[in-house]
Amino acid sequence: MTERAQLRIAGDPRPLVLAVGQSILAAALEQGVDLDHACGGVCACSTCHVRVQQGLDCLSPPSEDELDQLDEAPGVGLDSRLGCQARLLRVPAGGAVAIAIPSWNRNAMREGSG
Ligand code: FES
Image 1 (cartoon, protein in one colour):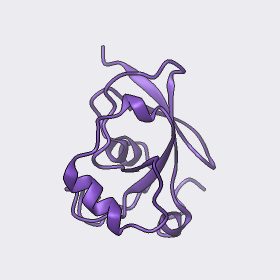
Image 2 (cartoon, protein in one colour):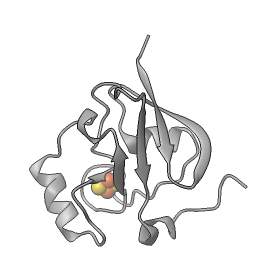
Image 3 (cartoon, rainbow, N blue to C red):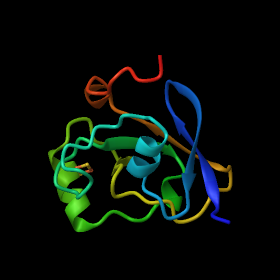
Image 4 (cartoon, rainbow, N blue to C red):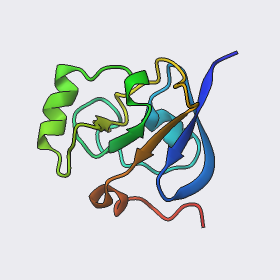
């Protein structure tokens, strides 16, 4: 059975999961979180930018291409990742990966959960 972590998104009360090997973007979309992904998840934009508040060390390390894209994104910090590139490598000790979607990006999200 695939190992899974909780995926917590700041401001979203839903109980989401992130499977080992799965990207944050794929998990979000699969569970109805409309995280923006203008390039379709091929590391050619930065609209899937998220800040990882917990579990950052359990994600796949960023590639040079990802770092280049993040250089172009507003509101970037040391905890910034592209949701389409960051894959879960192992379940964090606390059992959860917590992210925040930057406000400039959140504005692009549709109100999907009612
Ligand atoms: Fe474009 Fe992630 S969706 S870089």
